[in-house]
Image (tube, rainbow, N blue to C red; front, side, top):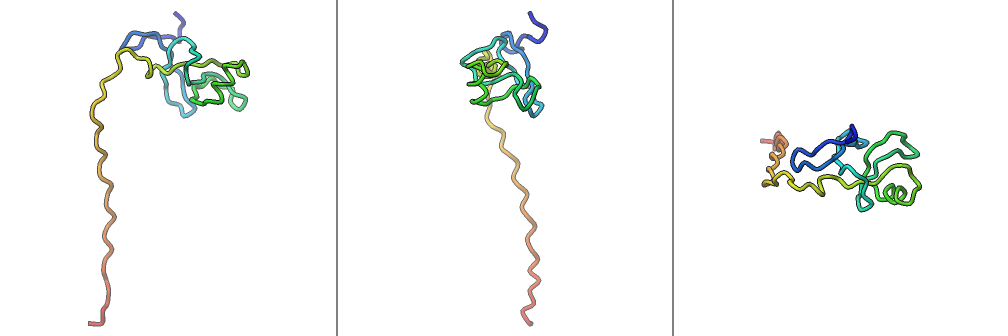
Length: 107
């Protein structure tokens, strides 16, 4: 197994971790998949190998115009995904302070 390939903690499938341009980690299935929607590789604007969800980059990679590969995000294929519970309600937005009614009505 390559050094950058690990096992998913939930389903034990082979995955690799990639970084997005924002610096976040994204789990990808270990092997390239032409059905995927994630381009993992350099672009003409950025030589770093980053994961990008971009339809144009995926199409360019599939036609051989870019040197990167297309992968499926592991979230889409995990055999034992984490349970989805009810969404936690957002805390209410703070209400702005009410303006002081310092009106002088000539009294």
